[in-house]
Image 1 (cartoon, rainbow, N blue to C red):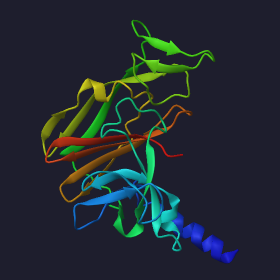
Image 2 (cartoon, rainbow, N blue to C red):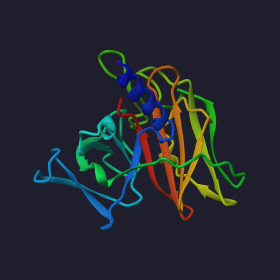
Image 3 (cartoon, one colour):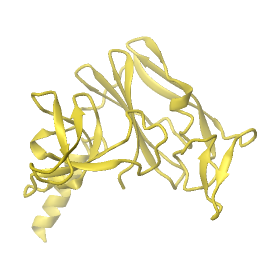
Image 4 (cartoon, rainbow, N blue to C red):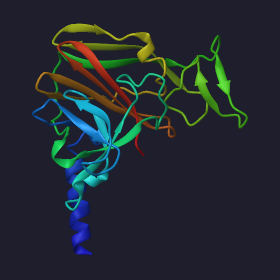
Length: 224
């Protein structure tokens, strides 16, 4: 019992420094093969490259495991995704590099959502036979559990080193019930803006990744 308690406390202390079980790879080749099964002779189903982020499973914390499940969205901007819309594969534990960078506070680095009340007028809202909303304006969306959202994102304002960066509308049209409790992380030349959103149901995580003043990835959803 004591050993279990120590392990539990250790996991809490460790994961508090990790961005929601998000990782990158560490591989001298610049990429890592994602396997269909946790073994080296299984099929390669994807290649993860440097600067690409993804979710990883709890097996990483188990010293007896040498392979870790990873969860990868079908495109780098999670466009058309739903809460758990990803595919699963495995990489060797030695290739996994959890994001453990410390928070930064810099007046020249900021991301802020312009949040307004959701307006259902002139919107194309699709409802299934169970009266659950599953699309808004032709897009799968994040932030509710099938109900109308309370708020929507009108724009996303980003500033890095004093330079304003424009976020296309398509990359915030599917985000609802957001807040501005945004954490900012830095790793070498990469900036990560992360926060968790919901109105009590339909909670989701979003991470915006910027490199050299350019948006290179938007990871949205949850593996839980």
